[in-house]
Amino acid sequence: MSPLGVGDRWLARALRACATLLFTGSAVLAAAVLARGVLGLIENNPRDLLPATRATLACAGFATLLGALPGFAAAVYSAELAPEAWRVRVVRVLEVCAALPGVVFGFAALRVLRVLGVTHATTLITGLVLAVMILPTVALLSVAALRCAPESLREASEALGASVWQTTWRVVVPAHWRGLAAAGCSGFARAAGETVAVQLLAAHSGGPHTLTSRIIDELPRAPPSSSWNHSLFAMSLVLLILSTGVVLLARPPARSSPSDEASSRR
Amino acid sequence: MLALVALVAGLLLGGALSLRAQPAALGPALHALGRTVRLAALATALALAPGLSLGLWLARVADDSILSRAVRSARAAATALPAVVFGLAGWVLVGVSTGLRGTTLAMALVLAAINLPWLSSLAEGALRAVPAELEEASLALGGSQVATIFRVTLPLAARGILAAVVLCLGRSFAECAPLLCVAPVPAEAPLTVTLWLAPADSAEAAVGAALLAALALATSAAGRRLRSP
Image (cartoon, rainbow over all chains, first blue to last red; front, top):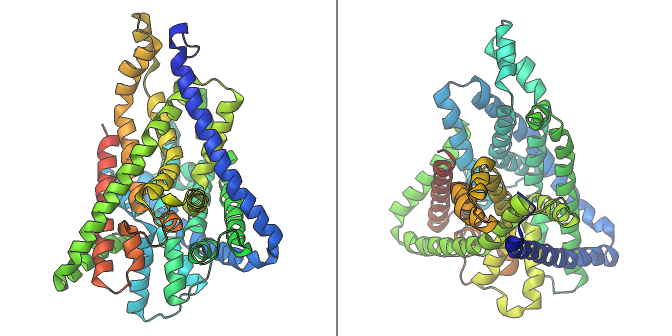
């Protein structure tokens, strides 16, 4: 609808000014956080970041290994195999669970561990809790990816005599594996960024101290502008690189998946 | 799937059972719920105007300039960031203006910053979904661009924008870590923070978790109602 008429330029200017202001403001804040992070890297031995980084990678890795496959299965069931009424029900349950706060998952995990008599939350247990947490997110994103499949693809396969199962596993899923991989990557990023659930497990049952749990744990104790404080910002820098890296990894292939090409041709 | 259903049911049931054992736990939990709703409403109100105007700018006005591309990639990066990084940015802000520390406004500002990128991209999607023919008709009838945007585009996108608002409210209800960064022991603690502070086996925590689960149920139901015509 651009370009605008002469009389309407003020609106365009106001909107542009608003965007510029927001962009500058967030850039200033981001620069403040980055500067402290870089200071933290200089003032401390960067090797001190390794244990927490390793814990984050291990927990998020276990979570993705344990949570992504059931998530994909739930998505395939809901998008392809389930009867019409169940498709909607599955998605509804997933939406509610994806909206559950992390602190609720942490609370539920502590209660379940207490009932089971587990006193020490290992990396594997923390990963399992995170897996339950990311499952709905992975499943919902995968459902969205599978829904992109053009109906003609399914019809062509079924016209050739393939069953619903064969169509699903040999046609729809292979055509959209990149969308599924992107959903898995988002799950990994969410698991790596999850804070309070991991922190509750670390504080109350000796779980691993990840980057996020250490930030939230030590921020009130570390005096402002100390090297301890700056090291927490360096941790957030690692977190930032991890999460943006994983999402960037997930993005370009998702663009070039066949359904997107089809929809961009329109 | 069964495990997830069992989780939600267990949370609600556990809350109900401990409420029966200790009815006194309901009062503080309801107060915290009220603070959660107030905080989320303030955060969404703060994010709404900038988010909507950013979405409008990107959907209808901006051409492919350096600024619009920079804003787009900044927004994509911000949606991928863990919330605790926003919390650290909020900590810097609170350190600069110390009057803000521990206030509801500081918590709402952080939540608004977290929600802004989501709100603007959802609003952009809703505005783009408005058929161009209707806008062209308005322009052909002599309506100005401003009139077209305010009388045709925004009203037609209202439902989608409302869905985005509900989503932001839901995200604000659920957030906890960034609030702890700007308000270590907040007087106005919302439900997530009181749940975080309470011992895991207390009735207070069970009731709080059940209320949060109910809140998640309610927001996702409202969001679904808005998204399906």
